[in-house]
Length: 405
Figure (cartoon, rainbow, N blue to C red):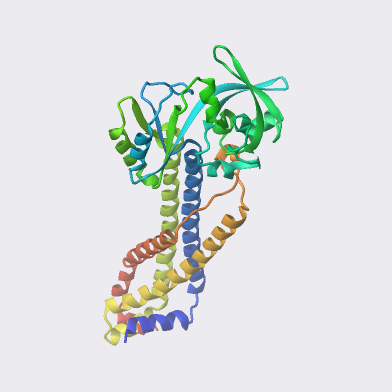
């Protein structure tokens, strides 16, 4: 029979506390608050980073293959990959697919209002799943339609500025020799909640850009490469660069958007600060509860010592008692945190200003393994820290405590 556990269970469940009742409740509440705050912080940070990363990946691809000519303009020098070269790229186990694209600067002219934009051209093989998720009105480009080259997706920012609606037409001018103009119809209105993207880009047909730039049928401004595992992005980029012809080079979305991804990495510091602060709060409250519990039960400790029970066994009794309080607080905090998590992910009740945060609601994302790991770490830190104040038991004299009683 595990006597320390049996005794801890009796004093925890059936013991009559006096002045320690309040501190025990405060301790349980502090532990619940700590684990709830930690889980929420990790979930929000992961969700926020995931949403922003997904926007950049969805719009630009994971890896971008370009001409190695140090061209810093928005319009890339055309390149062409053969079917054999594309097949070779797909042999990399982390490469999911390869899509050609091209960009061309243009000026939208709508009822006398003009707006400079960058037309990104895609073809019928392009995966429009991300674009479909961002569309507020209308639908993605239908490349099977006869007027596919005249269909255009514009952002809600441009639609509001130029007072355009789905189905309406306008003229776009392309600055070249000679100046060319084309009539486009708004097929859909999208919103990425990224001001830089929504102000600058419109989505159209790659074959149209090829005709405007007098490109060959298979030429493109570059190739977007989607990967299976984003965590292996840099490794895959290096592997592709090793096998690329000297006139081509591979970069990736993190390298292209360094400011955004550096900012996201800096947010990890906030997560660490919250974790440290919440652990400190929980540990301080646990130490207070343990010390008060020991002082309150000094007569019991003296009696156990007089009966021959060792200090280590008595310390084990109070550590079991502390573990009960920790477990109670963690269960309460986990339940509240997970209820908030499922409520927010289902309803998107808590909103954000998309012009500041790039998302219109508080995103959350966390795995069961992460929740389990956070709980285990908090329990481990608390028990290790509590072992020190439990040494007070060895200083309690049986004679004095029994006489005092």
